[in-house]
Length: 236
Image (cartoon, rainbow, N blue to C red; front, side, top):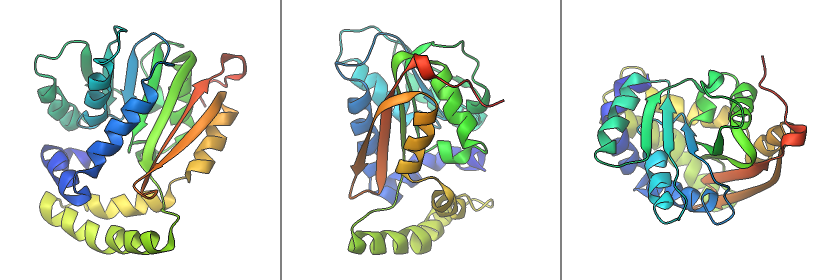
């Protein structure tokens, strides 16, 4: 499904969100790559066309620490699009990879992040546990995804657009037979609230969890620190 819309994915999302999704990623990168971030490489799982990976790379350029920013995704078509964006940038890499079975050793990355991808895997606990597993002790685990606004008037407008207009616009713009943009609101409705994700991460050994709603709560960034002493291994 995602492979069929990969070539127009960025354009469609830019139109459907009025470009706000780029601002969400930029703000997320700024929050999780700050002066408190420990040394080490960064991993963006379910990276899609690499927009968060690139946002993290741009943020990294503002710091004195030398890191490699890696983006992995299960879709070859998405990775192909991401690779084109790499151009002559150094310290950035894209490759195929499965979030539910990450090909990296334990305690490998200073930051492990996912943006708008966790709800697309069939086992949320395993996906989160794999993220925590490959994160270094005192490293950062972060999730950025859609959420439900709390203000009634914003929530009402959001529901109408998200469930009535967005699927039709996305389907028309993407010319996709698999109804990818009908899947989007359905997956968001079934996805955990930020508070529920925080509970899952806490059980896996992530502490000091913070939540930052963006654009009236349409999206929420959730991030915390891996406490190695209580880390639970990946779900088998």
